[in-house]
Image 1 (cartoon, rainbow, N blue to C red):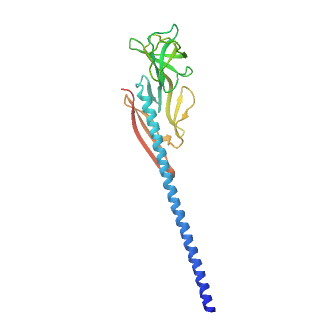
Image 2: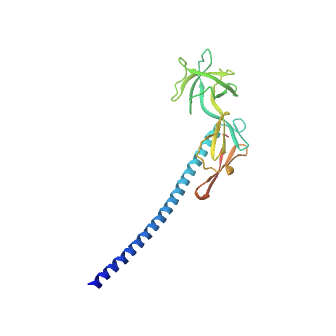
Image 3: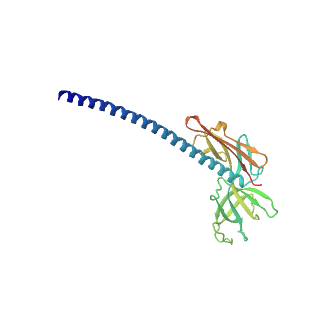
Length: 237
C-alpha cells in the first residue's frame, strides 16, 4: 500500500510538471500567433490607409486641374501647384437688374465675396476676371428655372453686366509638406488634407509637359517599410 501511494504521488508530480510545461508552450505559441496576427493586421490597415490617401490625392488633383488650362488657370512652381480653384458657376439671366449682374448659380459651395473672384465670359468670347464684391438674393429676377440653380445678383469689380457665363474661384495651392498633402487658400496657412505619414522628402508635384502634372507620393509604414505611387494628372485640353 505504501509503495502504491508513493507511485501515485510520483505520477501526480510528473503529470503536474508535464501539464505546466504544455501550458507554457501553449502560452508561448499563442503569444507568437497573436504577434504575427497583430503584425499582419497593422500591415493591412497601413496598406488600406495608403490606398485611401492615394485615391484622395488623385481625385482632388484631377478635379482641380480638369476645370482649368495650364498657364492660364494653373501652373507648378517650386514643387507647388498654384491654381484658380473653381467652386461653381453662374449663368446670366435674359433680363438684367438696374444694378449688378443677375445670374442663376450652382456649385460645390456658395460664392463667398471674402475669398472669391469671378471669371466672366463676354459676348466677344473673351474671359475676363473681376472681384466678387458682394452678392444678394435675386428676388424678381426673370431667370430660366434650372434644377439645382438659384437666382442671385452679383456685384463685380470691374462690372460685367453683359457677360454670358461666370465661374467663381478662389486662389489656392497644393503641396507635400510636413508629412501630409496640404492645401492653402490665398495667403492663409497650409491645411492638411491627409493624415501624417507621407514621406514628403520623396513626394513631389512636377510639371508634365504643357498639359499635366506628375505626382510622386511615398508613405512610410510599420518597420520603415515604404509604399510609393506615381501617376499623371491632366488638365483641360
